Amino acid sequence: MLTTALSTIIVLGILVFVHELGHFLLAKRLGVGVLTFSLGFGPKLVGRKWGETQYQISVFPLGGFVKLIGENPEEVVKEEDRHRSFSVAPIWKRALIIGSGPFFNFFLAVALFSLINMFVGTPLPPSSKIGEVSPGLPAESSGLKKGDIILSIDGEAIERWDDLSRIIRGSKGKTLLLKVKREAVVLEINVTPKPSTQKNLFGEEVQTFIIGITPFDEVAVQKVNPITAVGTGILQTWNGIQLTVIGIVKIIQRVIPAKEIGSPIMIAKLAGEQARKGIVSLALFTAIISINLGLINLFPIPILDGGHFLFLGLEAILRRPLSVKKMEIAQQVGLIFLILLMLFAIYNDLIRYFFPAGFGF
Image (spheres, rainbow, N blue to C red):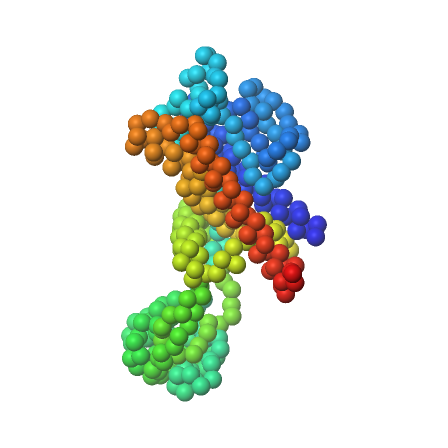
């Protein structure tokens, strides 16, 4: 329990700090005054003022905020501070300040992935060595065995399991000639893939072809130089963004059931599990959650960063800011939506972790 609590505080604290730090640094860099930098919402627990900015930790830890001079268009701003007011800044400045929070979340993911790649190693895809051969499927009837290493298929060299899988799945049932290394002997074996219906990562049924083999159970990593580590980290972050977007689309399409949506309870449970596995697992988990947080904040929902982008877009089109009243109504609607979504996610997690048989009402 203590490990779960500490790991949750660390993960959420880092994610919120980095997100708000993005807003803070860009605002300072672009000449907009910052009045408050807060980790958490609600009443202040501890705080200290340096210069014009109040730095504080507040009671409710699920979030944070940066309060800028003139953030509210109706706010009374001293004449000497008017040039540092957020509301009178050009649209491009306001857009950069708003977007810097999610950008810093993506940057954190890149940094964590890069450090792991550099000091622990980049995971290598499975080799073409066969692990298990499923009974009754083409691989077994063709004579393939556990431990065989597939060197080529129809003359095309095979280095990794991905190459092997791609050719078999795209074979359309055509007989394939495999060159196989078994101990010190190289054999040629013909195998005809069989059509099969399987579920993909999102639970969708897809038609494919298989021969009935799995990769050898081995984990290999390769340490890389800093440049390669960062490049791979950027690619891993981009893949994470794509996968998250696809997952969100699948939820909207109801391919992934809505009951899979999780709340901070799920984050806490998973953070505790990863912390018990070690610092590397916790860092990877933090990177993944950071990607999710960055994307969610870009949703065009009022009170989120994406909602502010929506307001800026409308301002650019209409050539005038929206009225404060309309923005307040939109933000209230957005807040109600987020509260309802959070309650739904908490309900899912209560069923998932504490009342799997239901509440029994």
